[in-house]
Length: 342
Image (cartoon, rainbow, N blue to C red; front, side):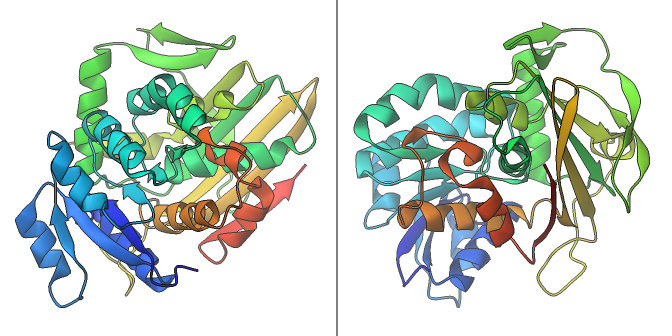
């Protein structure tokens, strides 16, 4: 548990950041609220006794002040293409672990490419994409692998009842599209491939209670970065229910709204991770409520394990590489309901 230790949360006033702050408090940590907007930080801190430390990514000294005296930093501020590198640099200077909730493909690819050697050589811990996208799917795929050392294919299908994107999600998506242009990314044959054709539409046979649903295939999410970073699998594909894709593509889809006392929306999810090798199939399934809210127990459980030394490696590492995947997934109850079928 946190035992009063201070943890910097960059982007604390954002939609996901607020869930992370609440989860940290629940688990005995003391969040240090940071981010670019001093007024929003002051508003968030009002009446809580928590300290607000404004900082911008172009001001290393301010980032250093934000992390001073903390035991770790959690980056919740998108677009992560802008925030990831400066906040990782600050964490390395401070000598504290770094975790983020980035769903942006390019930001996660950059983290592995640019910081792997430095983090490993210094013994630092950097855990990117420790969120619903990137972290949860990676843990499920790793758990489904079981005792397999390699597999032919990993498929991760997302069954969302709806997708009301936050402002941060829309901004991150815009940044990714700006970097890719008209191209999309897929991972095949052990390599990244740019494509300009439309992704396929097909039917995915989700476990109950969802059942068969139309999905957009090759709807590439952060799991396609994290999974092959540590699992020997040449084909990794993610899928998204077609209704959810229509929601996020529609500029008039509203942001998520609270449906319970904890601030969660009424959105439900089912994540179906399927691993195949030589005609044999293994599966791990998770379902729960609100993809943004569930990111908080994911990243805070990861933080707790990093600080307790319950890790399998150092450097830049995906969730399934650095943690015991089945044990981690079981620890997410009651936020996530789990079924493993190895």
